[in-house]
Amino acid sequence: MRILESGVDISHQYAKKVIKEGDFVVDATAGNGNDTLFIAKHVGESGHVYCFDIQTQALENTRKKIEKNNMQERVSFICDGHQNMDKYIDQNIKLVVFNLGYLPGGDHAIHTRPSTTIQAIEKSLALICKNGIVIVVVYYGADSGFEEKDAVLKYLKQLDCKKYSVLMHQYINQVNCPPIAICIEKI
Ligand SMILES: C[S@@+](CC[C@H](N)C(=O)[O-])C[C@H]1O[C@@H](n2cnc3c(N)ncnc32)[C@H](O)[C@@H]1O
Image (tube, rainbow, N blue to C red; front, side, top):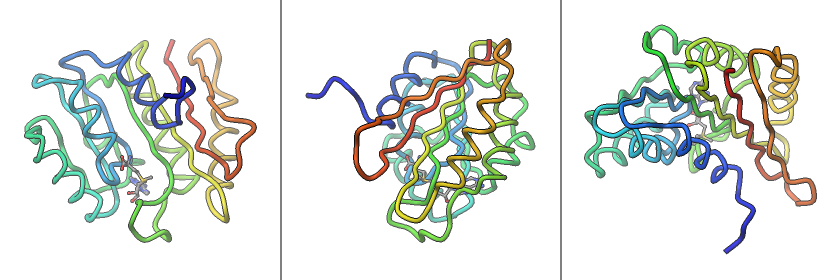
């Protein structure tokens, strides 16, 4: 077993550390529902997960996974862009998770975009409570995702360090652009 983890595993470690039973959390990019399932397990029966995706196929895949685990009561499946999350949520949120890019096994032309991703991160930062976190796993490589990675990093680097801590995990000696995991904590 390796000691250093993948971007997704790092994001799950943070999620596990921050989520307590009864918390309200957001999966901003439901996709195939792996992150939704992971965080749904941790909020318990009294907590709630809002998951967003712009593709009905993604939400169906996520719903199936959640129903198989009998956790549908604690998850809202919202077919809308994450940039509109504030229309659906009025609770204090403990955690927001983003997995950028396209739906694995789906249409690669439908993917997250720099401007809506940044709007959604901005709204997430407003919705999270003190010591709440936003996790962004950035996928890039081949001919896609570079513009979004640059825009996200530029935006996060200028956040006021008195209000937010931003930590980036990036492998620097691997081939094929492994994903970057970024964690933002509201101070
Ligand atoms: C890399 S996948 C997410 C993988 C997912 N976290 C999982 O565990 O399977 C990215 C997803 O973001 C979705 N997406 C793209 N733009 C979006 C937007 N503006 N709002 C919400 N979801 C979006 C895509 O449809 C795709 O399903």
